[in-house]
Image (cartoon, rainbow, N blue to C red; front, side, top):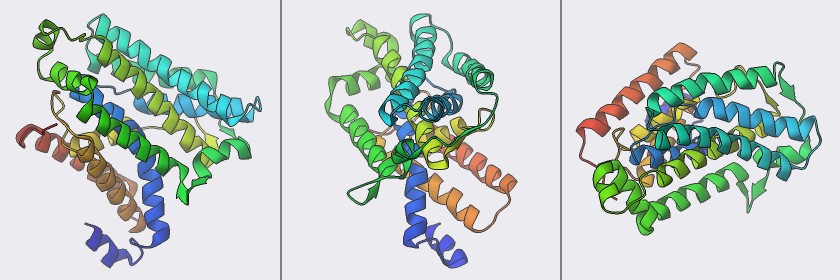
Length: 294
């Protein structure tokens, strides 16, 4: 795929374009990692797109309208995202409601809340807030550094901690995990909270890069994009199997695909068809391919 895009565009492998792919993929990876852990545990969160929008709006509002420091603005965004995740977690993990139904409803509810609180587009968040998405750390864009830290943390969590083993155990057989003494509610609940916070962080980064946020369109369709990356990475939707390295490959594949199609000036509806096809392909690979190992 990379070779095809380079031959047809002539600029796909340029340093500037590769940097753009990495930056765009960074926000996707930040959410894909905790979502993958959640899916491995047997749950799902379809509200991440709306949570991303609300997090970006709250962060931008605090920085631009109330002139708060970037740290306060970011903490505000994270708090909102974690709150959404906590609601999802309580309803799904402690009340036993369907994660698909709950988070699908929250997708609409949180989007409506964002539009109610911020009916007009927000912009001009200030140079301090712009640091979050536009600064560089050791010559690397800050979002890429953050994504790298999230990827490493997620991989280590699954590979070397008891919590990671519990995530797999809950996803494979919830009842057996319970009988073995694992708290089958607390870990998925924590993952819901982390996923919500990660979505809000991604929203704050996007708002920082664009210096604007719109309640009706920010993060629209993001939930399907990140789910596609997770499934392409080999995470099984029914839980119990997956790897962070696979998620990284899924994120890079999807980011490269979207960037290449954009460089080729492919119409939006064809890009949507390509992403939908990738989602179906990812689901098929996860269903019929060999189960991933830890």
